[in-house]
Image (cartoon, rainbow, N blue to C red; front, side):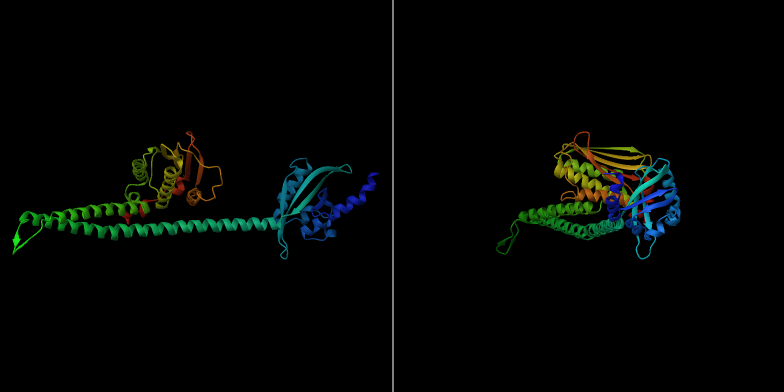
Length: 374
C-alpha cells in the first residue's frame, strides 16, 4: 500500500480525535483539527494561517512565543504550556505539547492539546477545601486553648481557693480537738463520761490529708490545661520541669540539651511548642516502649528547633491520617500555623523522632502577653 493510501484513514482519526492537534510553521498555524479550534474558542478557519501571537492570550504572548522559539531551535522538547481561555461564556484552560520536526524542508512544530478545565476546577476546589480545613483546624485549636485557659483559671482560682479554705477550716477543727483532748479527756458530766476525742482527731487529720491531695490533683490538672510556668519562667525552664516530672512518673530516662541563646517568644509560639512537646512525650509513654528520651531545643541560624527522640519502637508505616495518628497531624498543623513544619522520622537509636522548626522571625515577640506584664 502506498503512503498516500494511509492519508484518508489517518485524516479521519485526526479529525475525530478528542485531543487537539496542530502544526505550526514560521509562527503560523498550518493545520488545526476541530478539537483544537474548539479548545481555543475560535472557528477553524480563523486559526488556519493565523499567527500564533495574534490568537494567544494577550497576558501569555511573551511566554508562549519564548517557548515556541525554544522548541523551533530544538530545545524545550516535551515541555507543556498551559493556556488560559479568555472567553466569558466558556472560561477554562488547556495545555499544549509540541515536538520539532522538519516539514517540507523547514522546521515546524507538531503538537497536541488537552483540555484541563475540569482538572483545574477540581484542583482549585481541593485547594479551597484544604484552606478551609486548615482554617477550621486553626480555629479549633484556638477555641480549645481558650477553653483550656478558662477551665485552668476556674480550677486554680475557684476550686483551688475553695479547697484551700476547707483545708484551713479543717486545721482549725484539728487544733480545737487537740485543745479539747488536753483539757479533759476523762471529765464526767453528771453520770455520763465524754469519750476520748482521739478518733475525731484522726478523722480530721485524714480529711486534711485528703484535701491536700485534692488540692495537688487540681493543681496538676490546671497545670496540664495551661502551664503556668510559661507565663513566669519561659519555654526552656518549663520544658525542663515537665521533662523531670515525666521521668519521675514513667521511669523513662530523660535528658534535655539546649543550643544557642534563647530569646523572648510570642505566647502562641511557646504554647504551640509546649503542646507538641506534650503530645510527643505522651506518645513516648503510651506507645514507644522506650527506656530513654532526649529533647533538643535549638536557637540557631534564625531557626527555632525542637526535637524529641526516643529509643523505642518508632512510628508505624501506615498513613498518619488514620486513627491513632491525629496527634501527629495536630503537631503538623501547629507548626504550619507558625510558618514552620513538623517532621516525623526514625531516630539514630531506631526509635521515633519528632522535630519542629519555626523561623525565629515568626516566633519572636515582645512578652507583652504574659500575665505579669499586663
